[in-house]
Length: 283
Image (cartoon, rainbow, N blue to C red):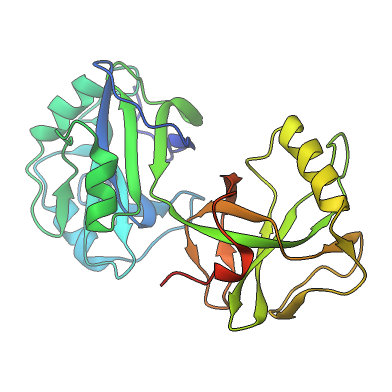
């Protein structure tokens, strides 16, 4: 079997579920650049997930010294290129390991003598690893089926649990639905700084049909001509409806962007216990 010049990396599917089970194992999700390393003899090539060559001399040098003639490693390179977190080994010394189970590949990887800046990603042994991830400020956790083979696609057998921030926000408007969507498109949400409502972004996920229709009916009773947001950029200019800022929702999101917007927000639910003027940005 010939040594591969490229392997499409296996990708994890995002999930908002939190679960455990004997068929699953968990790893820390590192924040950085997905990196596949190909070693054949003394030649080492490093590729990003979109098959662009990466110049990381310290990592390439460490891989070149490994006692294997043929090797493919998969992992995450830290943003500053100081550390390569290796979590899989699709190929080793003439053996295509992609059809082996994750547990088998881990045993093989354990035999590869990684030295800094190469680090093996270890399985987590916490009962609820996402709690540790939140406490220690990780980007998230990856859940992997122990019997999963290495698939060159986004797979349901690898699931990524991102650690969300969450806070209440005030609805100041909404956009029209598109396509087959009913009720509304996205909620326009913000928070108060003093008496000023600051725009924080659009929330278009996390709404099922029942909630979409119920929210639309409720927001229609609060319709007003003027935009309630006093501050904030990138407000939509068309197909938008403004409302009195009275409805409070709980929103999960990854982080605040540098221009004060929510990154990857989703609606968690309505907050009937919170008054709109009490909602400020949590820091």
